[in-house]
Image (cartoon, rainbow, N blue to C red; front, side):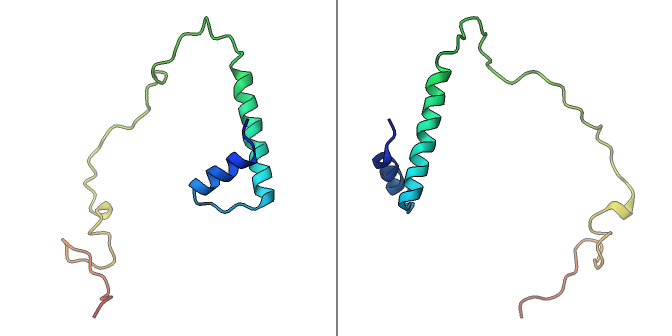
Length: 93
């Protein structure tokens, strides 16, 4: 099904260099995966309802609260600031 030549073709399209060991490895891995897919086609899904979206779950979220403590303010908790801006060392002359 997915032989060494197909692995070489895909590697060329993806611009990936593979040595002979890699080609053999990926060929076997892809072949095993395709066998697994073929085997999964035998599963009877006749009585299984389709899932159109993820299960409904309520998220546990905290309530939003305004933090008025000035020590938690980004600017005011910086080592150097002027009240509106961060003061940082000059990097470019």
